[in-house]
Image (cartoon, rainbow, N blue to C red; front, side, top):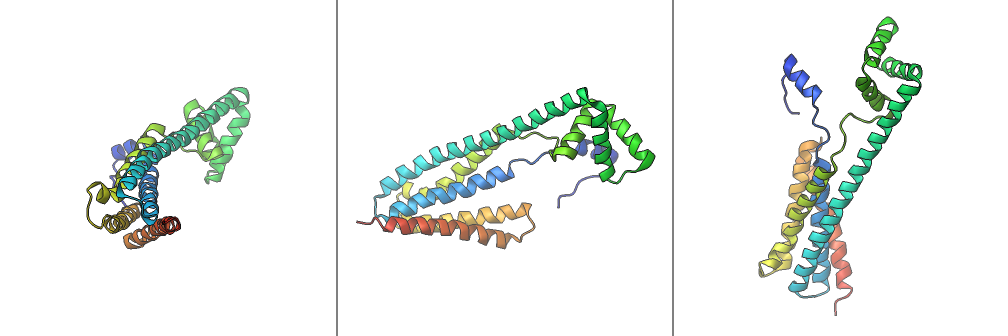
Length: 236
């Protein structure tokens, strides 16, 4: 748990400008998928006994095309969330305009469920509904469960693409460098990248780093093993 100050100025600055969800999910998702899908291609093609040149060509095509596809999906998904958030804000704004008393009662119920009662409840409701922006923000959170920070589609797309690109290049490096025993080296490097991704991911979770690392490595290894097994079916 990170430390932070508790002076009045520090509290006001932190609460007034929360950081939001960031790009952790997009980065981890992009890195794991980049490693898994690229090594799946490497394993499948190697299992079929095809040349290293074909492995590099197909691998690079996957890194660029699939990475862009995932970035586009991250952008579209976050854009849809953003649009939905703005749509609901417009609905609440129109409700406040057309039925302020009903919306006042909704604010009162939200605050009542947070533990306020009697005169304090009514005073708090009046104080919040005097400011339209605070009124709408409370309704977004209390009625719809939506926070006050909109998703950032472009940031999510960039994080997804970069993490996919970096992690996806790992299985290809031994073939690009034309190393002896490239497939074995690629397999070990990819497993190591799964391990590192899992260990880093544990920084934001309650799981021990080694458990998260092993779990990620096993999931990636299972996908790679499946791809290699399918590739061997087409060995000539």
